[in-house]
Amino acid sequence: MRKIKKSELILIILAIVIVIIVVWIWRRSAGSQIGFRTAPVKRGDVVATIGATGTVEPEEVVDVGAQVAGIVLAFGTDLKGKPIDYGSEVDAGTILARIDDSLYASAVAQSRAQLDLDRAAVPLAQANVLQAQAKLADAQRDWERAQKLGPSDALASTSYDAYKANFEVAKSNVAASQASVAQATAKVALSQTSLQMAERNLGYCTIKAPVRGVIIDRRVNIGQTVVASLSAPSLFLIAKDLRRIQVWVSVNEADIGNIHPGEPVTFIVDAFPGQTFQGKVGQTRLNATMTQNVVTYTVEVDTDNSGSRLLPYLTANAKFEIGRRQNVLTIPNAALRWWPRPAQVASSFRSEFEAMTQPPLPGGASSTVQGQPEPPGVVWARQGDYVQPMKVSLGLTDGAITEISSPALKEGLELVTGEQLAGSPAASSANRSPFAPQVRPARSGTAASTPPAAPPAKQKQ
Image (tube, rainbow, N blue to C red; front, side, top):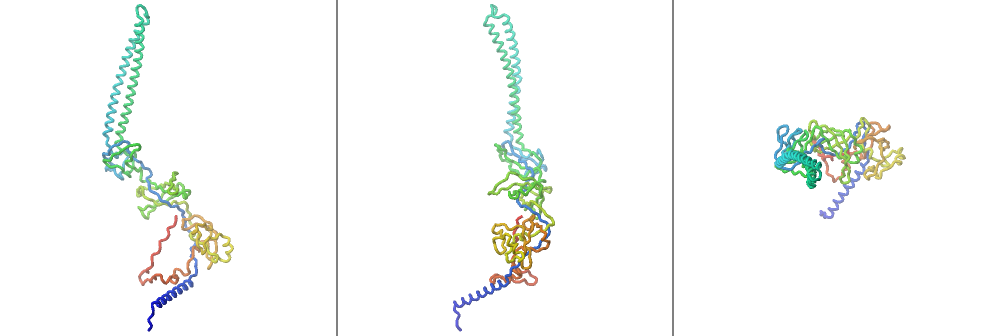
């Protein structure tokens, strides 16, 4: 028996592979008839929403700072008698912390002593006024006598001039002493103001809660030095009422025109999976922000937090309800995107089809792939092996289905949404590549070993 050469063996293997490929191509072409994938017109509800993300924020927050510098000596106690800390409930006037007040107490004592000294100077100045007035009366009498005598042999001219000068000086002394009284009184008022300032600074060493609420942030520790400069350092953050809370949502400028105060909003947080919270649009802030050339506006969503489940600063995924239609005819959005080939259109509608704007891609491909708009408001109903166009008026859409209105469309009518091989998926085994891994059928009482299905694409809301 002749031994087969290596080159001949390679040729035989190649011939077998070619035969297998030819048979597979023939079987594929024999069963590659194109069919339509359809979906019925249904009646239901359509809710149009705008999705965005935001942060849960307390409705009103008070930042408690320090107006003096010093070392934090101790914390106060909350309504439960525990030291002030995160989550402590406090009332208005509750002592939050105490700062070292030794320097400010010394300033108060110094100001008080100065006030006493200035107050004592007032009676002295008043006594000087009385003394000056007495000297003025004496000088006035001497001057009056000198005027009666006049310059003569009985009164020398020098003495006459001296009496007159003494009288003028006495009048000036009275005015000066009266001014000293006013000056001493002003010093008392100034010292009182300095004392009040020193006492106020001393009072600032005791940090008190300005409102009733909950401590959501404590930013100092005992022994830490507080330095007050141009701006007061923040020590505590108090939320007035956590039963009412807001969600600050960043909304794109393209969607902000559809959001109005009072519109319903639903949102979820990762902390409570499966639970949906309700809210309403409060207001839209006008101070827009730009990040990487994207302009966003902050929308305040008011919600009730009576159960105190929502915590500050949770991330929320919100949906703004901008429209709702109930019990209307709806179609899948895929029915609006599909476009047939000329050969797929029924002959009685060929002229109408030619008058329509055709997408650039052949084979029923969606024109949105090329970024060009499709003819709006046209769907295709199945008519045997062909399709016929039907014009519809479009309404709200939620990204998956769209509200329609048309006298020709009835509930249950099948509309074409795409194409598929005839007999799929049952015929898929006949059209599978011979080199692809085969899936064995499941035995009795066991599940088939099929690969997991791909997750559905996330629809834009």
